[in-house]
Image 1: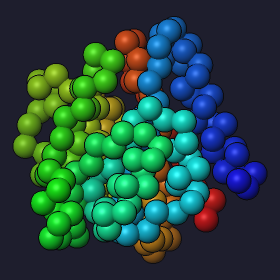
Image 2 (image 1 turned 90 degrees about the vertical axis):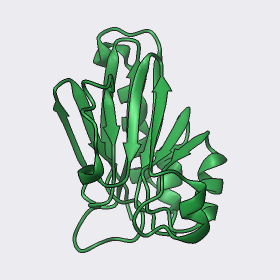
Image 3 (image 1 turned 180 degrees about the vertical axis):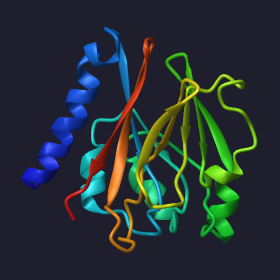
Image 4 (image 1 turned 30 degrees about the horizontal axis):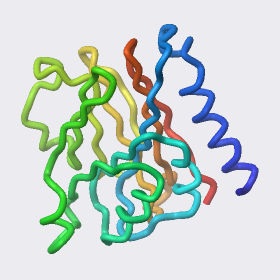
Length: 180
């Protein structure tokens, strides 16, 4: 692992290992979040996701072996994206709900296709992809997280994934810039 990837792993580990960042919570569950692999699963992304308890793939998977490789690290919840056709589209739903540590994560590929009010529905996190642009913001006590793209580089956008940290006290996340 390169020193840049070591720094990524240490940064993600510090975020989730320090309960004080999550209001003194004793239990922190680390969830890897990846999107828009488009058939390319970079070794740097696999390195960044090591040690997570669960992985979310927010669509545009590209090839079935992507989920298989991620499953070797942790259980995977995946949704299909707009480029996913045929078998991949039939294997993975349009959206998914993931309950973790008393919190609920809503996953879909295209945020504009969100048809519910996440806060009113009791979701603490909405994970999405599609734009290839990493983003993280809170609206009405809901964390909206786009991990960006961990697949082929698009224009001058960074290659990224994310780690979502969930505890009984709250949720937090960090975008991880991959050294590619």
